[in-house]
Length: 250
Image (cartoon, rainbow, N blue to C red; front, side, top):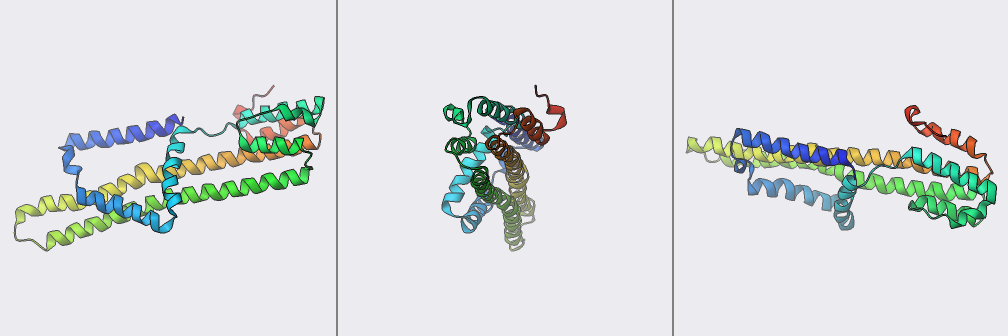
C-alpha cells in the first residue's frame, strides 16, 4: 500500500473541507447542475477519447496507484545474484524449481530453463517491456486527459452560469448568489485536476519508470546468467541502477 498517496488524498480532502467549513456552510459548495457539468462532461470526454474498457479499467488503475508500492531495485539486485549463484553451482536447470510472484521474472526464468539462447531471451523480454510501456502510457494519458478536461468544463460551467445571471439582472439581490454558483464549477474542475487526476498521473509515471528500471535489471541479470556471468560481478553491474546510498550489498 502506498501510504504517501493515501496521506496526500486524505490530507487534501481534509484541508479543503476545513477551509470550506471555516468560511461558512459546506452546502454552499454543493450545486447539482455544476456537478453534472464538470463530472458529467469530464466522463463524457473520457468515453470519446478512450474505449469503454479503458474508461472502466481506469478505476482499477486508480486503486492500484493507492494500494500498490513501487518495486524495490535493491531486492532485485540480491535476487538476481542469488539466481546467478544457484545456476553457476548447480546448473541452469536448477532454476526450474524457482517460483516467484513477479510474472516478468518468472517468464525469464522459464525461458532460461527451456534453453533459450541469450539473444532470444533478451528479445522476448524486451518486447514484453515495450508492450508494458505502451499499456502504462495509455493509462497515464487517461488521467492526464481528466486533468485537462475538468478545469475546461469548470470554466464552461462558469460561463453558463454567468450567461444565465446576466440574462436576468432585474433583481440585484440575486446577482451575488448566482455569481457564487457560477464559480463553483471552476472550483470543482480545479479540485479534480489538481488534487486527484494530475497527481495520480504523475504517480503512475513514477511507478512506470521504476518498474522499467527493475525489468531492465531482470533482463540484464538473466542474460548474464545465460552467459555464465560471475554472481559477484553481476551484483556490482546491476547495483548501478540503485542509488549509491542504498548500495548495501554483501
